[in-house]
Image (tube, rainbow, N blue to C red):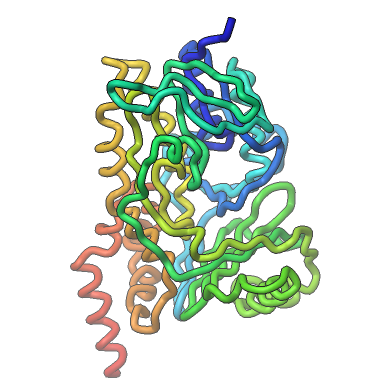
Length: 402
């Protein structure tokens, strides 16, 4: 007899494992399926701000991650156009620093935690369709695997990323598109001194990110024009190495020469980072993580958003009337300002924005608001209020005249 699950979660990475953990703890019979084998990696900026670290702790994933890896916690430096904004974050449920574990470590810790609380897991297993059309008259009733098996379930959750099979099977359109102008190239290094900070370094036409990851490794991200990631692997590697030598204030040339590049250079073209919203739920189904909504990875809020969406869905289905009627409104309200803000960070700084960088560096309250905006404690409109912008640009004009 075919088993009936309470939930089939399609996608076993951070969004899917978080949802599986939350549902399994509520005594749901959960099956998680993913086409990939684990441990494995995926393209990602993989940062977690204090709010995300707090959520990871509540799931039990943080303790597992820290038991298996040396994960440094860090504060923030934002450099740009001749200015520097340096400091810590406001505490969120006891956590006041960020982390940036590689996905091969983070996703494995999440999946192991899901198993430990009772979720069943099948990796190397591809979902190719759904049982039911996801409509009132024909709700989703399960998933179909590539080997022909059918998995009946009360709910099917798509946690399977931007190219979601669940979303495609339901015919869901990408709405409210946005795009940036950067392509990314990144790799991991051993032997870079850890000064306790993750750094965004932004200049006209280029952005460099330096952040400690785990187990003594460091990640350097080069954000440049689309052509930076064109050509052969050797050409992309050469451009990447030339790029990161252009930020000696953040990583000295001596440190680079002493360090070891330990991975190939991974790349993400601009076309891979275009934003959208999808309808997030319907009869018998819901989406979480990048399948549901994708913002520009320049603000590194995607994992935190996935954890929050998974928490919302599990809570809503386990309490009250057990419906997700408020999910879309909650998601849209929460994402409203941060969606556009992420794509502002997905465009290169311009010289005329220098007063903004000066303002962040010299106005302590603004600098704190900026850092806390990443944790969603502060809205972008507060960081960049009309009053602040007027004051900063007036100061800049005065400085230019003198």
